[in-house]
Amino acid sequence: MYTLIQLPFAPDALEPVISANTLSFHHGKHLQAYVDNLNKLLPGSGLEALSLEEIVAKASGALFNNAGQVLNHNLYFTQFAPQPSSPVPGGKLAAQIEKQWGGVDAFKADFEGKGTGLFGSGWVWLQADADGALSIGQYANADNPAAHGLKPLLTFDVWEHAYYLDYQNRRAAHLNALWQIVDWKVIEGRYAL
Ligand code: MN
Image 1 (cartoon, protein in one colour):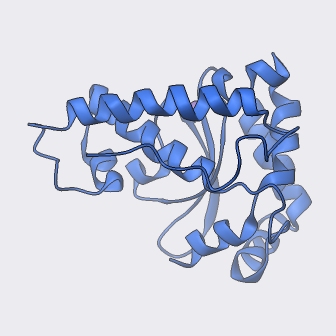
Image 2 (cartoon, rainbow, N blue to C red):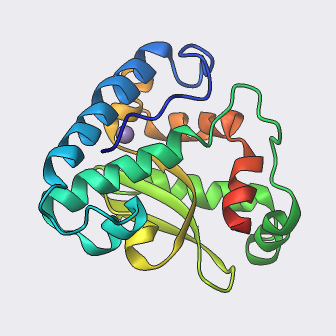
C-alpha cells in the first residue's frame, strides 16, 4: 500500500518559484490520484512485492503509468528546498558534469533546452549509467530512467499541471526558475548510491 509522500517543506515555502496553489493541486490532487490508482491496480498484478523502481521496470499500461508517476513525483518533490543546503553541484557529480559539459552553466542550458523542447507532457531527467556516466533523458508521460536501467538523479516535470497556474504557457521561464530551489546535496546523494 503506497501513501502520499509528505513534502519536506511548508506548502508556501517554494514561492515564488512554485506557488502554494500549484503545490496544493500538484501534490495534493495529481500525485494523490496516481497513488490511489497504483493501490487499485497493484493487487493481483504479481508485482506487489517489488519496489517502485522494479514495478516501473516490469509493468506496462495503466500500472506502469501510475507507478511511474508516483516514482517521478516522489523524486521530484524531494529534490527541492526553499534555501538549498547546496545551491550548486559539488563532489563527484560536479566533476562529472564539468568533464561532460565543461561546466554547470552549460549543463543547465542543455537541461533546460531539452525540457523546453520536449513535445507534450513528460519529464526531463539527469540520469546515470552503471559506470557513472551522465546523460539527459527526455521522457514522455510517465516514463523515466528506472524503466531503462538508468539511475534517476534530477528531474523537471514538464506536464502543464506542474506550472500552468503560475507560468501559463511559459514553460521555459518555469524551468529556468527551478534552479533556485534544487538542493544539489540531494542529487549528489542519489548519484553516490
Ligand atoms: Mn506532475
